Structures are given as structure tokens and as C-alpha cells.
Amino acid sequence: MSVTVVVGNPKPASRTLTAAVLVAQGLRPDSAPTVIDLVDLGPTLLSRGDPAVAAAARTVAESELVVFASPTFKATYTGLLKLFLEQFDGGAGLSGVVAVPLMLGAGPAHALAPDLLLKPVLVEIGAIAALPGLYLSDRTFLEDGAIAAYTERWRPVVAALNTIPAVTVQATNHA
Image (tube, rainbow, N blue to C red; front, side, top):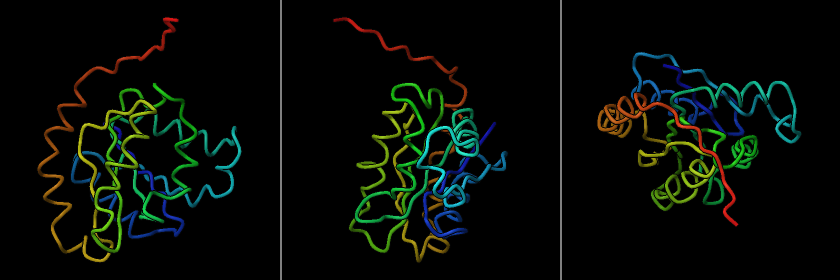
């Protein structure tokens, strides 16, 4: 099983990265996740065709489970993550990939952001976003038990979703 963590925090080695790795390990304890810390790609995300960005996008598209993680910035996910998500074609770019939207924030005001803001984009680019998004307190997630509760609840669902064969989605024009 290939598991990937994509982190859109502009700070390297962030709490967002730590939380995302813990979520990935909790959902698939049998697989060490590949980590893509987007801050390492920096300005190369602004141009199409960069080899490192293309390799990162390929890793994500070939994964079975991807945790997409971002801190909450201005009530939504970061531009860094948005730039990376722009690498995928709409409809089928992440076909067959189980995606988990994860966001961290300072308080509960934006607790619905993973489901309201990040999940629709993941669905638009073809991911299977069947799990609810997870919002964590950036100060207490290591102690509050939220990751353990989430991963224990949803681990069997991830396992079941990863047994479904990938279906290629083909757009048709009926006009």
C-alpha cells in the first residue's frame, strides 16, 4: 500500500507535517508514508513542467492513500497547497486515490474548513474523499486524542476503500 502525506505549510518541518504523518500512520499502520513537504518545492510550484513538482504529483497520483494537510490561513488552506493541487487535471487527476483532508488551526472557528473548503477541491480532481475531514488544534493535537479517535474510527473504511479497483473516469460531451 502506498501512502503519501502532502503538507502545505510554508514552514518546514511544521506541526502540520507532524500531525499529517500521525494521521497517515494511524490509518495505515502497515505502511510508512512518503512525505512531500511543499515548502521544499517553493517557487517551482509556480511553473508547469518542473521535474521535481512533476515527480511529486506523480507520487501522489500513484498513491492509494494521501493525507492532504494545511494550516488554516485566512479561514482556508494555504496557497502553497493550492498551487500543488493545480498540477492535477479535473475529474480524473487523482482517480482511485483515497484522500483525507486535514487542517490545523488555533481554535474551533474554522473546524468545518477541511470539509467545506479542501474536500471539494480533492473531489474535483478525482480523489475518493469518503472520510470526513479532520480539523485539529495546532497546540493540543499531540495530547488530546483526536488523531487516535479519528484513525481508529476510519481505519477499516480506508482498508475497504483500498480494495475497490480504480475506475478510470472518462468525460463525454453529450451536447
